[in-house]
Length: 224
Image 1 (cartoon, rainbow, N blue to C red):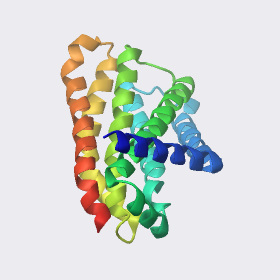
Image 2 (cartoon, helix red, strand yellow):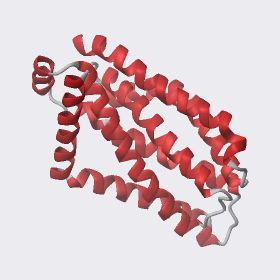
Image 3 (cartoon, rainbow, N blue to C red):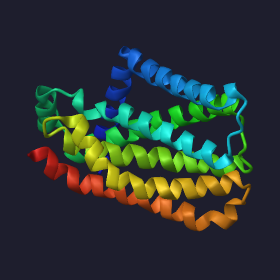
C-alpha cells in the first residue's frame, strides 16, 4: 500500500511537471472557457434579454462538461506507447489511473472555480446558497475527472479515441449530470445544505464507486 502511494505521488508530480512545461494546454482551456462565457453574454446579456436561473445553471454545467471532455481526453492520448510500456515495467496500473484521477480532479476543480467567478461576473449570480453550489462544483469536478479518466483509458486502447470517448462517456455522465443539476438547482433556490444531504450523499457515493471501479477495471484494460 505504501509503495503504491509513493508511485501515485511520483506520477502525480510528473503530471504537474508536464503541465508546467506545456502551459499552452491550460491557457487553451481558459481561453475556451472565456470564449464560451463571452458567447453566452452576447446571446443574452448584450441584448438586454433576461436569463432565467434554470437556464443560467444549465448553461454553466454544459460549459463545464465540454471543458472536462477536452481537458481530460488528452490524459491518455498524449502518452506514447513506449511511455506506457515503460510505466508497465515500473509501476502498478492502479497507481497510473489514481494519479490521473487525482491530477484531473485538481485541474477540473481549478477550472470550475475560475469558471464560476468569470461566469458570475459576466452573467450575474442568481445563486441563493453559494456554499451548496461550491459543494456541487467539487463533487462534479471529482465525478467528471474520475469518470472521464477511466473512459479515456479505455478509449486510448482503440483507434479514433476522441469519438469513442464521447460515445462511452455519455451514458455514464448523464446520471451524474442529472444529480448535479438537481443539487445546484437547490443551491439556486437558496435551500440549506441540511435539506440536500440525500443528493450530496448520492453524488459522493457515485464518485467513490467510479474511483473504486477504476482501480479494479483499469489493470485489465492496461494489460491488453
